Length: 281
Ligand SMILES: C[S@@+](CC[C@H](N)C(=O)[O-])C[C@H]1O[C@@H](n2cnc3c(N)ncnc32)[C@H](O)[C@@H]1O
Image (spheres, rainbow, N blue to C red):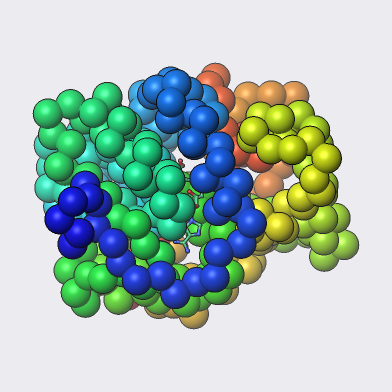
């Protein structure tokens, strides 16, 4: 631990893509404006609705007890929300982007977890290298981060290593239908961000950035499921959660999964997510 810093630093293994610099620039501006700007510009969802979302996933909220790890924890809002539960001892919030850890996590912890900020341990690091002992962690969380992994099986195996037997990974992330053709996934990867996006991210409006440049990967149900089994996880439950919009009502999943519509914004691309409850075998 660095004694003059309020976060731990763990060795990074992955190479940074352009997304890390973009996120760094964004939070350099947002952090100066305070908590609400950090949420509005980075997380898009406030603690109350994060908790409501987890409570919509059978088995999720009850899984949060003891010691946890948040994989790609961003500004720490998800971890701090979960850490409000008395049964949660602490959560290691592992985030790759230095500015996000350094400038935002303490602001977020002070607002979401006043007086108990220490329950969320900020870590500047890589979800591919968790400096935690084998079988030492009760639960893990992913909120919109694992689709940024360049080797999901490796990331999941590292998570599996630190989880206790039967420990759970609760994921709220992106997914595509199984019938989505490769050509459509490639189209999405190469979408060029518009000027409005660049402005919102405090970037030069004339640069060309694709979704792929920012580390966005596009996985269907079947790819996620093959990653889970390769890494030693069993799926206990799957559910679709979507913000109630015309588009989201029209799109149906092709796995016959229950879909829940929310009257609040879930954030992220399309405001629709898959919730997976996974158990380490
Ligand atoms: C879409 S954001 C979600 C952040 C947070 N979970 C939330 O909901 O606010 C994805 C996050 O994953 C982080 N990330 C990407 N690759 C990572 C890695 N290898 N290790 C740790 N964090 C990573 C990014 O820097 C970013 O903050």
